Length: 143
Image 1 (cartoon, rainbow, N blue to C red):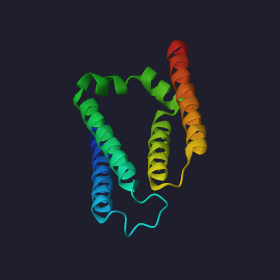
Image 2 (cartoon, rainbow, N blue to C red; image 1 turned 60 degrees about the horizontal axis):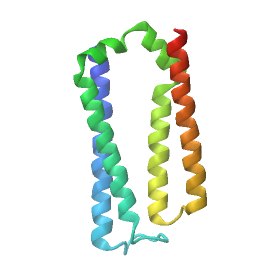
Image 3 (spheres, rainbow, N blue to C red; image 1 turned 180 degrees about the vertical axis):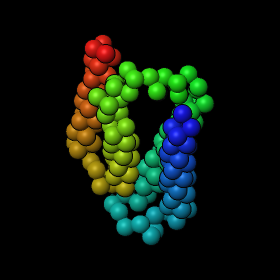
Image 4 (cartoon, rainbow, N blue to C red; image 1 turned 135 degrees about the horizontal axis):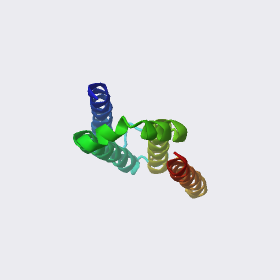
C-alpha cells in the first residue's frame, strides 16, 4: 500500500509541476502578446496553455483526493479490481486521453487546428471513452 501511495504522490507531483509550467507559459504568452511565438493565432495561444495547465492541476488534485481515501486504496488491492484494471487498460487510456485533450487544446488556441479536424478528434475521443466505459462495465459484470 505504501508503494501505491508513493507512486500516486509522484504522479501527482509530476502533473502539478507540468500544470504550473503550462500556466507560467500562458502568463508569459499573455504578457508578451505572442510576440515571440510564431503561430497563426498567437493572440489566443495563452488560453490553450492556461486551460491545459488548469486541467493538469485539477487532475493532480483529484489524485490527491483519491490517495487520501483509505477505502479506495484498500479496494485497489482487491484482486477483482486488479483484473478489471488490467483488462480495460485504465492507466494507458487515461494518459492517452489527457495527452490528446492537451494537444487538442494547444493546437486549437495556437490556430493550427480548425473546426473540422477538431470535431473529428472530439468524435474519436468520445468513441474511445464510450468503449472504455463499456469495457469496464462488461468486465465488472463478468468478474
